[in-house]
Length: 345
Ligand code: AMP
Ligand code: MG
Image (cartoon, rainbow, N blue to C red; front, top):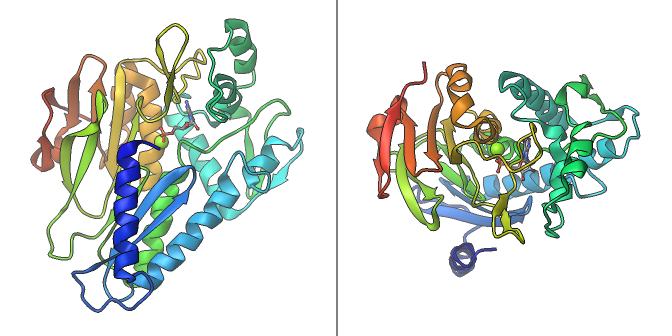
């Protein structure tokens, strides 16, 4: 955990404990009820307003843990573990797992395989699941890539088949779905103003209690302790994939990160160092942020054409910000990089 996250987390935890307000009825609609959760290998901060905020947060936390138990690739009780150890047999899975695999296959298709959830064995080889990092031998990557192909996954209602040597991981999309599920719970509790950050992926419900938009900052991938821009949104998710989020420095002094290009098994290095997707559906945003990071400068235009209604902020490896016109009046560049509006039609 970074020092910054640590401090923020400690500060928020301290405030929550001090207020002792998490589970009491909150009668002042302008006062936030907050809850911090550690799940899915990340710190999550949930904040909701209104009289039902306490019970809504309680339910949301339960749902987060439920999803983690179903979706974790490393817990031997999860659906994903069962699929990965099914030895070529079909596996019965929960509704959530089926929805996510279905979406991963859809976005795998619409991004020409940039999103490929069968990349997991390659990710493991680099050490991203154990933090025992190393640069794999070329021949090893080539042999692992033979089993990377999302088209070999067969989803039939709530039954999943993957070939014997394949393994999957939903790390690229689980948090976006979790955000959507939290928003559903908030709505069912008549909460109409809330914001959550799931390891930096922000999802909002309605607007701030005073009716103004939420201001969401996006990190500067070149100095992740700083923000690079602020976007004003309501009822939307702001989801980022960046090369600074999880990485190690190899013996060769190069940086290697956790988003892998299925074309060669190496960390995707196709022109972008971060990709932010803004839209109403957190699951789509999460899938797209990872996929567009892989697709890079050469592939992004073709993909975003198919996603009207979404906005995108790309940061290139030569320090330029490119963002779509839909957020033109809601976007503030606070970095020293140039920011240029691009079309997505
Ligand atoms: P995100 O932070 O949403 O971009 O997700 C990154 C995570 O997605 C990684 O930690 C891996 O678990 C997984 N992942 C990495 N590369 C890919 C890829 N090309 N397709 C699907 N999942 C990936
Ligand atoms: Mg993602």
